[in-house]
Amino acid sequence: MQNYYMAHDKHQTVLVVDFGGQYTQLIARKVREQKVFTEIVPWNSPDLESKWSAADAVILSGGPKSVTEPDAPTLPEHLLRLGKPILGICYGHQLLGKLLGGEVVRAEKREYGKHVLCLTHPSALIEEEGMVWMSHGDTVIKPPPGFVVTAKTETCPVAVMENVEQKIFGVQFHPEVSHTTFGNQVLSSFLFEQAKLAGDWTPKNFIEETIEDIRRTVGKSKVLCAVSGGVDSAVTAALVARAVHKQLICVFVDHGLLRKNEASEVVETFREYIDAELITIDASDSFFKALKGIKDPEEKRKIVGEQFIKVFEAHAQKWEDCEFLAQGTLYPDVIESGSPTAARIKTHHNVGGLPSWMRMKLIEPLRWLFKDEVRRVGKELGLPEKIIDREPFPGPGLAVRILGEVTPEKVKIVQEADWIFREELKRAGISPRVWQSFAGLLDVKSVGVMGDERTYQHPIVLRAVESEDAMTARAVDIPFPLLEHIATRIVNEVQGVNRVLYDLTSKPPATIEWE
Ligand code: XMP
Image 1 (cartoon, rainbow, N blue to C red):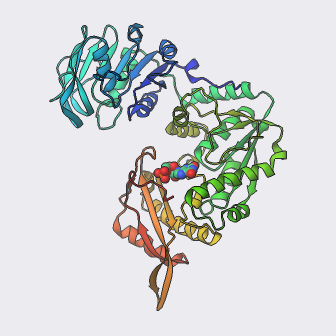
Image 2: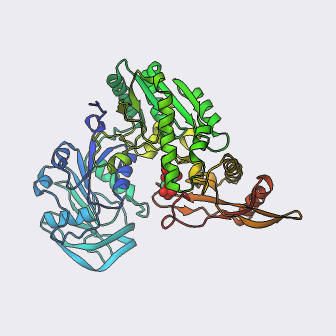
Image 3: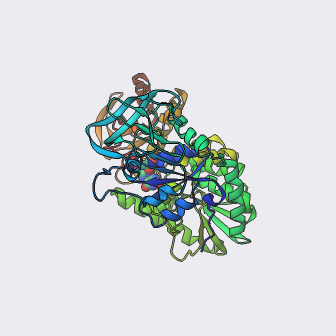
């Protein structure tokens, strides 16, 4: 059994009760940005009561249901009387209205989008009027006894209700969404003025506690950590290295499907910044062999995963005495798996699942962190920007950016085109607003003319997206002259390409990757 670091044992915690709202993780992140630790728990979790009792404050999230429906998600009423400061947001606001004796109705007119919030009474949460983001069908029309209505909108008579004495607050709008101009101030008033929290969740504290925890958990045993060059595995390795550096063995498997110069950069950067042994394995030949003739995207993913396992198996005797495996699992993966305390081996994107005989115990130092927190921890650990701000890169690498069969020749084409594209974006100062940018190679051929010769070659598709979390994304608005310049460079400098396309599709309906 693992002895996991429990952030809520060491820090004041705001429990975010999830009613299925699309912004629940955002609420948790926004509170953490204010240096207060949050834990998300589903409204129907068997752990709800114990977690509520242990929490320092509670936020009730939004949700898609109507509180007026008989089977609507709800809460045991006595929890509301435990004296915890509570902030209900949207559905949470309506649920407070219903459970505490107010009146909630299905709204005649659905409020969606930006609205002007007008103060009707001095408020403990809101300093001034402004724009708020609303998205709801139900409306509280009468607050529960003991509550004061402090703000309304044109169509919402109880947009904010407050019971300062009991420290229970409800807001119909979404303070966590950036369209609510003073959203952070609403959260900070709740956290610090009303709930009197200290703000003790900082990267520095996290690092110190995690290092101590890793030392205690690992003892004198050895730890294996697979690194990919990405920020998650780098921060994981750096934390374990700080804790037990001589006992850590890092493994970097080069599958030959990385971007241009990436493998050597990963190794160099690792050696410079992380104090641990690094074993590099050039396994590109075996990956190409396994991928030969395979066109189906999912099959390619599976093969890359299996190859990782084979490479691990082939080298297993070298790290037989490793008792622990360190992985960079993040909090969103943990939430999606159901329980933050459930131990499980998630198929690691970069390792592709591990052989069952590798009966190592897992340590997942980042399992309480969101991606932005991992970056802050990485910065605090002194990792360079090139690691911290590295664009997310899929585990199967260029195999999912080369449509159809993957060959070393095609990899070379994509690497060169990708290099030019990202170099030009960097030069034009566009990179900071880019979530991911890359070149893909399409599995069709088209006719072109170069010099006096007819060509019949593959097109390159360029993709650059802006995104917050990869769940949704939109194409980056790259000036046309720059796109034209990039296209010209690619067809001139990359052999085998006679056409360049720019993908304008957002996600959804497209995905970020082409496969
Ligand atoms: P999509 O293409 O689904 O991608 O919009 C969302 C994010 O996930 C990355 N991605 C992957 N990462 N293994 C990974 O490690 C994969 O098989 C994989 N597929 C997509 C993608 O780059 C984007 O950041």
